[in-house]
Image 1 (cartoon, rainbow, N blue to C red):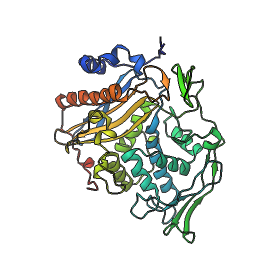
Image 2: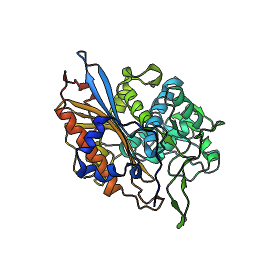
Image 3: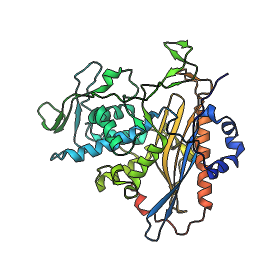
Image 4: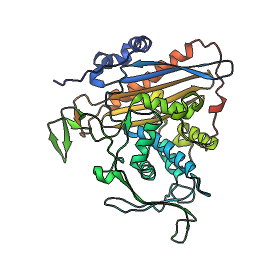
Length: 406
């Protein structure tokens, strides 16, 4: 029989009661919350006469010390740090659209000279960000990780007041810790990616001399698959990335409501950076020209709350500004949800483990049966509550009305 760890955790009555009112939706998970390792943050937003927001957060089993694998949610800080770095370099001609060429200088590093998904066929920070926010592209994250550098990635986020995270490896690549601490040489050029192009900014290979890790080993489950064989011992997450749920929501708030977080938690972004982020945090693949996505990409693929359990198009009155993650049986969504017709807005962040047998890397995770329905139903329950919730003043949401590609 599996034994599930217990932790000190925060649970507020309102959120617990909302879940308990729908046992037909949440009963199996609520009866064994340790098995599904659920954490939820629900934040109400109230506007004053000047439309300035204030926030009230409710928690369910939230514990910053309880590890979960953050998967692709680590891509949001990569996006923000990459934009911030471009701004802080202050190089004439260096923008998010400048061609970014990645070289190699160490074992297992790879080069990038072209990007067939972009209008000009060249890679750039902007194109990597689009692919991250639209379809959670792993290679795009890896290229921004290499531009930022491992030490800067962690030190800068911790200095901003996001202490409960560590980003120490690329995604979907079997690299060692030493390989991950070394990041590729990079050139930003003026031209079409040829050898004769003039270099606007050049960055040599960076080597991180710090170690970012937990204070104790992190092991989960009872076994894992390795080369087709079951290893009957817990899977080791000690050297994996981590991004606590509260830090995730706070960072999204820093993007959407920068004036409402502490100054040190903000990122050095321009008004045009914010416009760009708002567009691609909420734009759907079917609305996008570059990259072009086919009909196999459904709205719910990257919008787990409300829509993750189906294939129907989202209604036009609802927009979700978010970043999702899915790996090792964990599903995560970190979102700001608005309904322009009803004047509804709220933040919702949640994680659930869909690995009830405790075996990792066996591709038997219960995403479809448990995870997607749980997150979609959670979004719908909170949305329905928000529609009925009385507000002293209506919300002016015009700043989040975006012109999309198509």
